[in-house]
Amino acid sequence: MDSTSLRSFLEIPYDQLEEMNLEAKEQRAAGVDPAKIEQERIKYLASEKRIKAVTVAFTDIEGRLHMLDYDKKHLLKSAHNLTFDGSSIRGFTEQHESDLRLKIDWPAFYWLPSDVFGPGKVLVFGRVETREGQPYPGDLRARLASYCQELRAKDNTVVYAAPEIEGFLFKGLNAERDYPDTGVFDFVSVGGYFHSLPQGPIRQFIDSCAEVQRAMGLSNEKDHPEVAPSQFEMNFRYAPAEITADQIVLYKLICRRVAAMHDATASFLPKPVMDVNGNGMHTNISLSRNEKNIFFDKDGEDGLSEAGWHFIERILHSAPDICLVLNSSVNAYRRLDPAYEAPNQIKASAVNRGAMVRIPLADEASARVEVRSVGPDANPYLLLYTLLKTGLEGPMPDPADSEGKRSRTRFLPDNVHDAIRIFKSSKWAVDMLGEDFHGKYAGVKQMAADRCAKELGKLVKRSEIQFHHEVTNQWLWSKF
Image 1 (cartoon, helix red, strand yellow):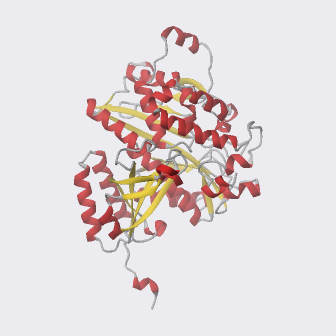
Image 2 (tube, rainbow, N blue to C red):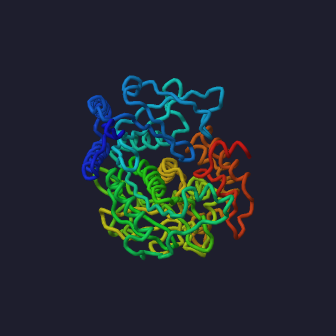
Image 3 (cartoon, rainbow, N blue to C red):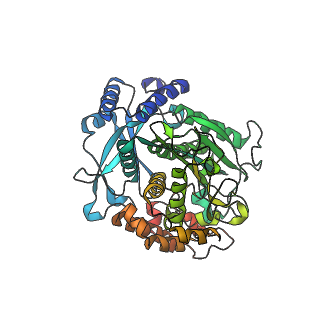
């Protein structure tokens, strides 16, 4: 007997998946009572006999995705008492205080395409808590959600965000991990911007990823090859910030999984190859209050309201302090090379793509602030929390001093060591993130920097790939 006939695990057609995931996303965006959603999900899991396991996902302080598969029956019995060893997660707890809890975030629930993730599985995000059941300071996902909830409760302000995430598709299953041995990344295509043959390798990869993203409710808008060889970008529709951050994590997971199915590697290193454009993650933010875009003013400078300009001014003022959040790896500072459209100038502009912040041409529905200096390897929860907190509550520049600054061009740090030094000494960064998290984040970034050559030079070093937080693993890290 064929072994597959012995199994009857859940497999849902893509069009039905999209409907189910969009409905769940709408529930979450509309603020439906999480307790009501929890009851619905538990009832569904109990009644759907074809589900064998539930994948619970969370991220660490650098934004790496961690996943645990729980047997469905066990999860239904023990959902309020899920624990894991936090000392095994870099940047989390010390060994003597290792136990942490996972609380299921039932509204962040996804049905998965079985041909990509395997049949009989669903995915849900979890929030990390202390032994006592309090929010864990290192869980920026929970902190972002809490801050967005505070804004809603205060004056019905909803934060919307949309990223533009670029990546490379390289030949081979483990191109990044093999780089220390090979010293080279092989392109699958050299077609360039918007240009690739139908059914060519980069187009097949993009098409496959887009299908999976749509099925998981990401609401795709457009996808295409980018400027550099073998580079891609797939954009999805704006959503409330906490949903968008989850979608960034899922986008990268999907791309990596689909690439593996094509015997390739999807890489989100900011600048893995010299002499071509790097990868960015332009981050678009807008604020809606009582369903009105408060960043829009048709008579304002560049169509932006006073609130929008104040948001920008605060971000520009604290740009050096938060640069380590936006550009979080040794390799990220290669991308801030002005020869390749690098947005490294601490200024805002409607037309200058070298400016850190761009004000896109827009109407009331689409008026937004675009922060262009973000690398695709940034922790999306930490990134959005930092941009929001800084833009809304960060220090404003002194008017007398700001005139002088406007008359000269200021630049972001051009290496991780300067970014770490500025971050460590920043009062705003400590006030915003808390002393404990601030110290742990600076610490893990310093450890990575110390494992790499101090001078970037003109060649991508093996160590900056090997010890990049999205590439390295615990075994490799411990061997240094």
